[in-house]
Length: 295
Image 1 (cartoon, rainbow, N blue to C red):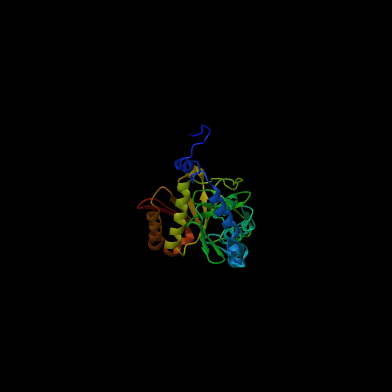
Image 2 (tube, helix red, strand yellow; image 1 turned 135 degrees about the vertical axis):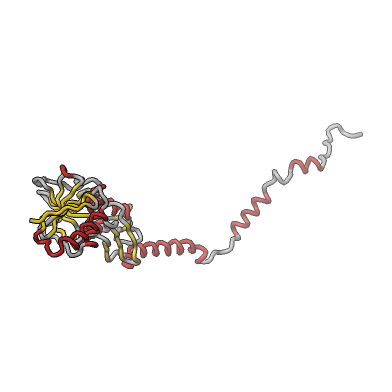
């Protein structure tokens, strides 16, 4: 007989289920502990290589930022019509190099020099636009003024100014400052009034035409020196161009400039010749019909 209290034997499938690999973690834990205590020792380079590389990069950056290699040593202003304007622009740009970009990047470094900030600094004093900045490596900054940007000198009652091709007074000229002989001196027919920096005294079309007349006059009539141009608002678009000998020419800014000056040259060579000392005025505004008056 079999006792009723005898336990039945446990089947092997049940044992496998209760102690399967997914629930029994002892072997995995032992393996991890074994690996933690038996890691190979790292060399000094293996522990410090990334720190060495990072330090090298920082040193190179510091050398680039603060090294005298790329420090701006010269500023050149090209194509400025008046020497005084070029000098004043240089002084403004040198002041810009004393600033820092983002508080840490020195502006006297050619690599980090901000042309947009320099342009803004120049506009505060000169009303300039479209300046071209270029780098002559490793230490020269060059600024190029747009061609024919300045067309003349405006003589107001309070100051003397330079006029650009838009008819704006862009710079106040100091007394006895040297100016280019290529610039036209412009005076007002009526009593001169006070003018101010940035004021528009000529229309853009008139200003550009006056600049063209000045350049064409020097090309066709190099022996006839201009003294000044008279601006009379009531007589526009006519301007009076006075020569150093005292006689003057009526020229219209709305007519073809080349034809007017070519006619003037022909008249001086064929009719006036050596009698220009007795000449009072010439009028070339009416195409082939030329008028002149002797004293």
